[in-house]
Image (cartoon, rainbow, N blue to C red):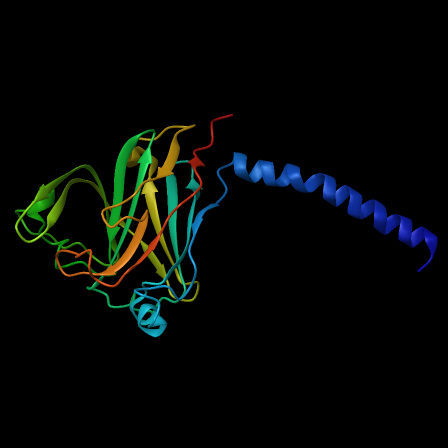
Amino acid sequence: MNKKLLVSLTAAVAVFATLMPLGAAQAAKKGGPVVVGEDPAGDWGDGSNTAAGDALGQDLVSATIGMADAKTVNFVIGLNSLPPTGGTPEATRYTWDFSVDGTGLELDGKFTNYSRGACDPTAGSCPPPRDPGLQPFLLRGECTTEATPAMTLTLCQELAKIQAIFDADAATITIPVPVEALGAKPGSKIVGMAGTFGGTISAAPAAFFTRSDFPMDQLFTTKTFTLPKKK
């Protein structure tokens, strides 16, 4: 390699290295996707049956938040594997607990949710029964707990119903939540919270209720997402 070419390549690398931090800062400023949490693959349940966790679509590996556009925040659940039918459609439940500027909220959904989404007296959404549609996630808030002889129930009010996107090829579930429904504004901070089962995000077998002694996977988020401020 001649000296002129070597000098040119060195200069190009230097310019690229100088621009990289700026590009990363611009992406963050615009609300680019932020991986807010990760979890090892293969630890569903007690870690002894990874095939079952994959077949159910319940082995969590990542959590990402980013702006889809100025009016929508994408919450993305990453899985080790996601079957085309969303695992066991009616029996795999996902929850994501977080706060927006200190106000606690929860996303709760399945690939199909006729067992609970059609009529849920505990959320004040029934009667009358309704068709929740495919891939429904509910944004819930104002949660309280109530002890019963069988279990402790978490009761929440429904704030919005959202159609999620289940991508089997990417093994992701994307939940596009309106900024207005979150009660958020430019500069608002989204922080993960401990949910009913301990983790920020949970993936577990469920019927109408989910028991804490069911085999499941949990992911804890460690980073805060801040909505970009207007220019």
